[in-house]
Length: 481
Ligand code: AMP
Ligand code: ZN
Image (cartoon, rainbow, N blue to C red; front, side, top):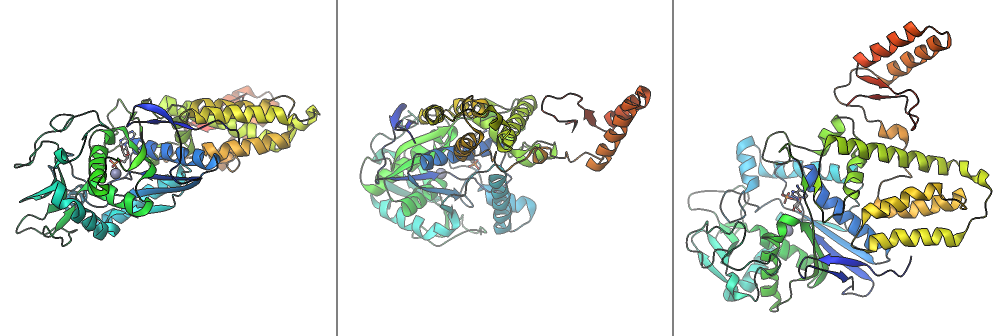
């Protein structure tokens, strides 16, 4: 490990700042988790790939990491301005299923994607409905000085804290989405801490509170859980860039009220930019949308998507396209092949004496890239050049690649070329059939029966198999996707 200090972009100050832990040798990180009323789309998963890389870099740098990600299984409304319905209650009503079943189903689907993308398990998943007593205690602590009650619930008065909206650079009376959706609010930006169940109605998820039966507000959840598990102030809070505008300013206001200080609750607030899709299939509420499973069904290994994320800086917008994903898959294949070659010791024939200095300076550059606000795109280049470096034996290369892969998390030491050949869901031909046909074709070519060889190739093409003679990566065929 080199001494390059880690610098991270703090959305609060809009500046790069050195990471200086609050507790010596530790890093405490909270990541806003998904709202589990539907499957996550691949844009959502970009937020967790980013948080994962951040956690891996902190571990690589030697910090003892405590990472917490929440699961929002109650309270997130269909509209950020306190209007609309609870997303989970709405999904339950539409599907005539219990809200608890829905939350469980989509939480598990989210965890499947987490695993498929090699995202490390955090120290703790905090499930919002497990923390309702802490949320009520939190609200009780700030109610007198900072909140007021309306028929619909308990509201936070944003004019009671200093510098409200500094994260979003907005004021109490303006900003994106600041529509006064609830009659009686003192400021347009005031938000619900507790949502009372309307008289005569019952919600599937509701609890007793000093303000009547109801459910916690979404922003309250993250403040109560991050404070309860990590303690204020903690080091880093992450989320997608949309959270910089409303959710996180509201968390900050609550944290200021709770700690009776101007402290935002976390030292550094980090936000990943969006994955955008021009075809409009990214919205969870728009029927068929881009899920990780859709990529797999089309024959793409999920780690090709992880690589696609790493190719862009987390603060840049990333445009999704199938061509881009295909290019990422080819790049991943090349990497896996190069690592296989190193593993098999083919380069040992060079007979060079390994220069430890050379390995170290290469690793330093790799770490330098990541230390500069997680420049994964550059770090990837250092990883890619390692297998072909001159003057380094295969064992040292392998050890260096292993180190690099612990940070980038592409699983290069565990996946094989065969793993990357994911069978598209629509494929009808089996791999054994393809291999048999290709063996026949090889025999036909050896016997100079080119008519037969071409006929076999045409037949395979008709069945969705592209034959790739002389492919530099050594792939003889692929199922067209
Ligand atoms: P949600 O389940 O809607 O609360 O979102 C989960 C996470 O995904 C949050 O951190 C969002 O900010 C983030 N997010 C939502 N859409 C995108 C997107 N298109 N690209 C990247 N991150 C996103
Ligand atoms: Zn949150």
